[in-house]
Amino acid sequence: MQIKDKEFELFLSEQEIQSTIQRLAQQINQEYRGKEVIFVGVMNGAFMFVADLLRNIDFECEVSFVKLASYEGVQTSGTVHELIGLVNDLYEKHVIILEDIVDTGLTLDKVFSMIDADAPSSLEVACLLYKPTAFKGKHAPKFVGIEIPDHFVVGYGLDYMEYGRNTKDIYKLK
Ligand code: XMP
Ligand code: MG
Image (tube, rainbow, N blue to C red; front, side, top):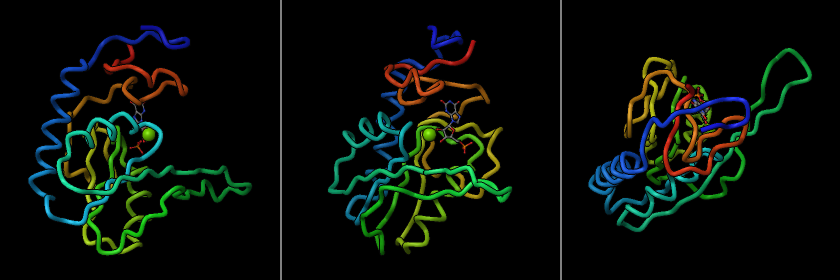
């Protein structure tokens, strides 16, 4: 499959993705049933994962989305990150962050520390894909769909230059 200037090949099929999501949902259903739960999807990449996971969650829950806004600083102090979109009250709720992929884990650390400031009862991460060899974050995901090598992947929400999110399968760079 061609996206812009790059060639990609099939990596994970729709069936593998969907059966992985069903397994993750079963784990979460067992551990969280009866609790006050809010799922927080990280935009943009997680939109398909959130939609498919939540269709397999069988208890009453809230769902929301956040986006990490990054601005290039005018000075050399670097990048400022801000969590946009989250209006829900997280105090004493069980929060599960939903990520399409955890790579270095640095994005997740930022989201994690911002949400943690709202004093939830618990805070965990569920991700569809995890690159353990690239990970150098503080908060490892508790619920991991598929561990993958350090390949660049696209599809099923994941993008190359904002393209390629709209596929049922996941592809890797050839
Ligand atoms: P980390 O965990 O390194 O991830 O902070 C930063 C963001 O980069 C995206 N990411 C990817 N996107 N293919 C993609 O299309 C990839 O292989 C890939 N690895 C990381 C991801 O959205 C994450 O939020
Ligand atoms: Mg992302």
